[in-house]
Image (cartoon, rainbow, N blue to C red; front, side):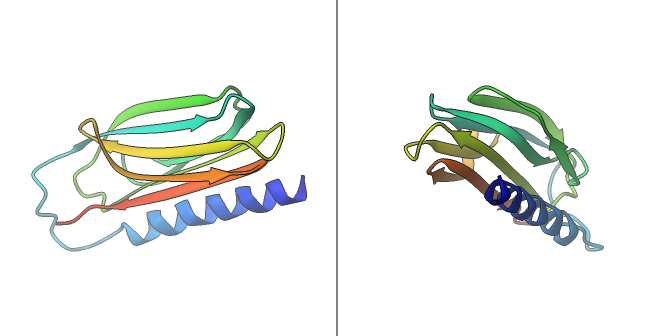
Length: 130
């Protein structure tokens, strides 16, 4: 359980740092908001417990006490958000578990990451180019 808490803390820190670095006083040259989809998929022997993702302002939203092996949401992120992040934790019944996190923009996967083992933690960050 201690290992799981450390993984959760690491995931949360990554998302918070991403949100902090996404703040900028520069003029954004992007043409508008982005249609973002977050997807988390665990193997059939694993259950997702926590998801941390960027919200429409680029700040971290944490969801806990989740269950099941899939989770997703769609939202429209403000144009001035420069970093979009996703992290998740899951636990598998044995060391063969897998966890994949994906960030999609307009239906296209722009960033993904995978974790394997019994105690799973995966994070990814998409840096928006101007």
